[in-house]
View 1 (spheres, rainbow, N blue to C red):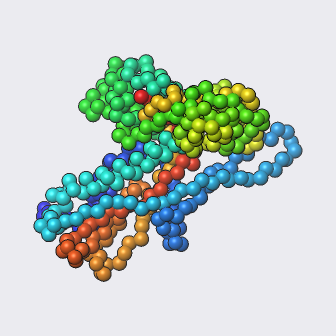
View 2 (view 1 turned 30 degrees about the vertical axis):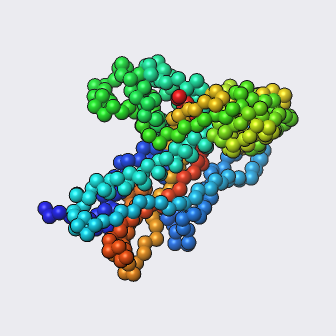
View 3 (view 1 turned 60 degrees about the vertical axis):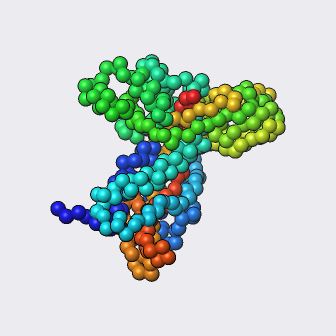
Length: 405
């Protein structure tokens, strides 16, 4: 068979296949909102614009015979599309090569794009997930600790109401904790095929209802200088996305996870207490002396969207998960609906006027556009790879960070 020249169509297909294989975190999140972007592109959506994603309404149970009509409230969260990519410059000799001989260059270019998409998703997980386990940061390097990590994470997702559907829960770890877990679980009884796969690849196979993956882009969070016992809640009956406290004695960083006294999480359907203190993520950096803590999710003490048992107890201290001034890798377990990635087709320019060729390829919800144009000043062809994508966390509570140091 004759060598296939590296046209935009061929490069787009090759690049997309490489992109799909390189994504780890992004491959296991919700992709259902892409259709809404694609349908609206004809009406003028473009990079930088925002779409409001609607979340399903919730209602309360009615006891007895008499109807009690309830208003329908559909909360929304923003998802912003952004454009990014990588550009290749070819020599005249390289431009005549087959796609096989350019594969390494294409792979290197796509790796940059895949890395950035995953990096942004994992940064979102760090800042958006309100839950955090393993505050000591101890490595899961024994069989008992590895099993405990996965069972504790599953329990937290259960408490948050995450469905237990096969293949919809994932645990992504940084390289070192992933290696620790491989070592920790090496002595477990498993089918020979599973053991062989894990030993040959050095990667964990699905276990305990979790798909397991490793990603070098797992983000690192550093707690501020505020001591973990916090300061006293200032005022009774507080709710919402900001809680007043006595002046902080140190800094609190965005992404820090906190609990408030007397505030327990509830089952999202029954609104009954789980018996576990609700956790919240701080949404902005705070300097020493600050007297209000902005958090997510907002505290809701009653109604269809109730998520806690009560308001914080006045006069008692809030608590910080982890230790002051300590850095943690924010490995993350999540149900696929916790985060969403939209990656949609873009406008393609017509041929001529400097454009040599253009092609856009879509597969399994991933889209990449390849455009080749000519730089007349330097007498070289340039090929650009572009992606239009956006991240959001519609159900961040269906996720939990797992700290390791």
